[in-house]
Image (cartoon, rainbow, N blue to C red):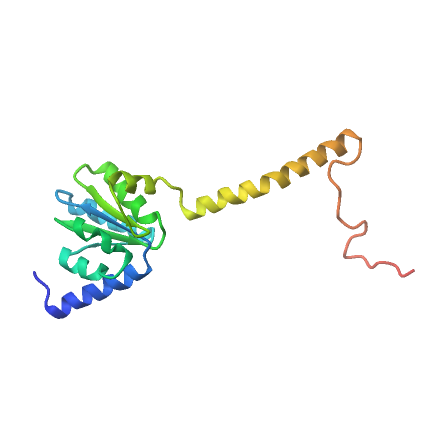
Length: 181
């Protein structure tokens, strides 16, 4: 069923709103993929904050005109599913993970930072850890010198016969009043 002119305008407006916030776009050909598998892909994409939509290519071209995704207009050919994400790697990761288990689902192109990516580049982008993992790794890296220093101090104190851990609790319980001097 074809859309009316007003319906097409609504679709383009919806996609333009998503494109304005997105950092990454991935295009994939879905020909031959079952509806059940595409439903699973949509569920996974939604849970990871990825906007996924099957669009007419002419509507998609209109939606990306004037954006950093405009460079991929020549790749917008055939039955495509479009995925957009605010996270730089989320769209690539969702689509790439799904493509591994479905040989009929083929990644055709992607766009990141105004540059067109081929299938290999999209998969390389998908292999980058997520923002949360990178922040955790950075925090661990920042904590390692401090924790190493603390272990060295504890070992030196233990070797000299002093207490390994300094007790910072007060000598009198907090519930008892302290006598006035």
